[in-house]
Length: 169
Image (cartoon, rainbow, N blue to C red):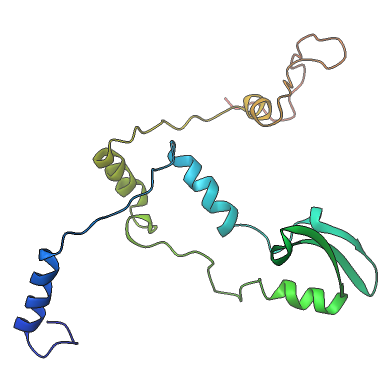
């Protein structure tokens, strides 16, 4: 029984009346790939209060940075603040010790997350891509486009002559 209703029958009549209504549910077309959703959300949930590229100048007494003026047609403007005021505003975005920015509930909570996500993928028919562990050469090539196994001067292949790590055997 709901706390808002005096008895079960009045609450049940509300529920019954809701079933009589023809509901129209609008769902936006989903992203093509699920990792795009994560990329989109991470920009907002894991970003810093201000990025270094927005800082224009600073000295002992003030900080000047770029910001977007949404009230004036998204124009980029400069703002100078006293150093202490800049630090005060920056620290408003820092969580106190023991606080978390994001808490996960339901199937995303830490306990059994992998098994619950696997079940969600199965139920939704989402293909599960196997995790591929890249070597450091493959990772650098993927991230920077530079093949570290090729000499930048002569174009020949690097070969290992000496290892700094002891042999295990």
